[in-house]
Amino acid sequence: MSEESSRAGATVATVMGREFGAWSARADREAAPDGRVKQIESPEVDAYEQGKRDALAAIARDSLGLETYGYPAPCRYKYAQILRQDYKVWLHEVAGCVIDETIAGHARGYNEVMHAEIERRHGPKVFEKASRKAGC
Image 1 (cartoon, rainbow, N blue to C red):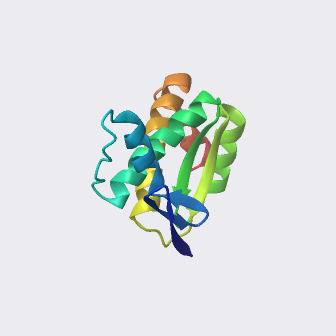
Image 2 (image 1 turned 90 degrees about the horizontal axis):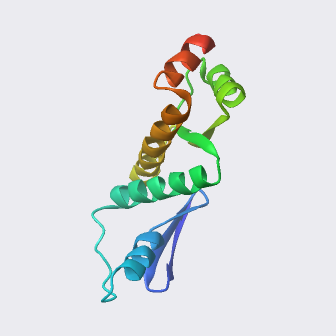
C-alpha cells in the first residue's frame, strides 16, 4: 500500500498513488537563501500544507472540488451530483474508511482552502443549500 524512496536527499512516501514528503524539502530549499531544509513538524502538518498548495493550484486551473474519505452518508451521491451540476464543484473520494494522518491532513488543508473559495464564488450558504436540496 505504501513505499518509500529517496529523491534528491528527501524521503518520499507513496501512499495510494500520492507522494508525501518530498515537497517540503524541495520548497524549503528553494525558499531558504542559505539552502537549509526546514524540519517538518509531522507528516500530518506536511500533508496539510501540501493540501493547501494543491488546492491553490487547482483554483488557478479553475477546478473546484473537495476531498472526501470514509463511509459515505446515504445522501452523499445526490449531494455530489448537486454540487457538480449547480456549482461545478467535484467531490474527490481519496480514501475509504481506513486513513492515516497524511491523508486526513492533506484533505483538511485542501478542503480548508477550497471551502473558502467555493463560498467566495457561490455565497456563504452554498453547502447548506446543496445539502438541503439533496435531502441530507
